[in-house]
Image (cartoon, rainbow over all chains, first blue to last red; front, top):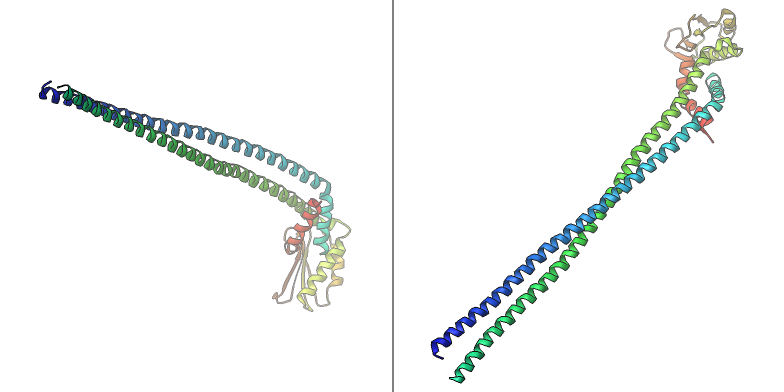
Amino acid sequence: MSGIDAVKKVVETETQARRIVDEAAAKAQKVISETREQAERIRQEAVASAQGRRDGILREAKEKAEAEALQSDQETEQILDTYRKLSDERKAAAVSKAMALIVNG
Amino acid sequence: MNTMSESLQKLQNRILSDARLKAQETIKEAQANAQQTLEEARRRAQKESEEIIAKARVEAENVRRSILSSKVRVNRLRILDEKNRIVQDIIHTVEDQLSSIATTDQFENTAQRFVAEAVKAVESDQPIVRIGFKDATKKNLDGMSRVLPKGGKLVIDEKPIDDFGGVIATDPEGRVVFNNTFKSRLERLDNQLLTLIASTVFSE
C-alpha cells in the first residue's frame, strides 16, 4: 500500500468517524426536542386536569351555597309564619298594653 | 508493508472507537438531560396543578360566601320588614283606638288627667287649655273645668287636635306651651312603645 493510499484510508475513516459523531449529535438533539414536547404535554395535561378539578370544585361550591341559600329561604319562611301567627295571637294584648302606655304613661 | 498496514488498521480502529465512544457519551448525556427535563416538567406541572386547585378552593369559598351572604342579607331584611309591618299595624290600630277614645267610658278620666298634666307643666295661674277629641261632646267635656285653676281658660276645639286628639296648654302670653296630645305622647314614648310592642308580640 502506498503512502497516498494510507492517507486516503485515514481521511475516509475520519469522515466515517465524523458521521458517527454527527449522527449521535442529531439523535441527541432529537431526544432533547422530543423531551421538550413531552414536557409540554405533561404540563398541558396536568393543567387541563387541574382546570377540570377547579371547575368541579367551583360547581360543587355553587351547588352547596345554593342549597344552603334555599335552606335559609325555608328557615326565613318559617320565621315569618311564626311572626304572623304570633301577631294574630298577641295583637290584642300588644294594642292593650300600648294604649295603657300612651294613655297613662 | 505488513507492519504499515497493521498500524493503519489500528489507527482506523482507534479513530472509529473514539468516535463511537463520543457518540455514546453524547446520546447518554442527552438522555440524562431528557430525564432531568421530564422530572422537572413533572414537578412544575404538579406545582402548577396544586396552585390552580388551591386558588380554586379560595375562589369557591368566595363564591359560596357571596351567594350565602347576599341571601342571608335579603332574608334578614325580609324578617325586619315583616316585624316592622306587624309593629306598624299595631300602632295604626292603637292610633285608631286613641282617635275614638271619646266614645269610651275611660274618656273623662283620661281627658281630665291630660288637662291636669298640661296645666301643671306650664306652671301658670291663668293657663289657656285647648282641648279637642273626635266625637267628644260638651257633656263629657264638662268635667274639665274642675281641674283648671280659677284663672284658667278652657277652649274646646270641635276637631281633634293633632289628628288623634288631646290637650295643649299655654301660659297667657303663649311663651310656655305643653303639648299633651296623643300624637305628642306617641312621639315622646316612641322608644318605649316600640319596645313594648316588640316584646309583647315577639318574645318567647
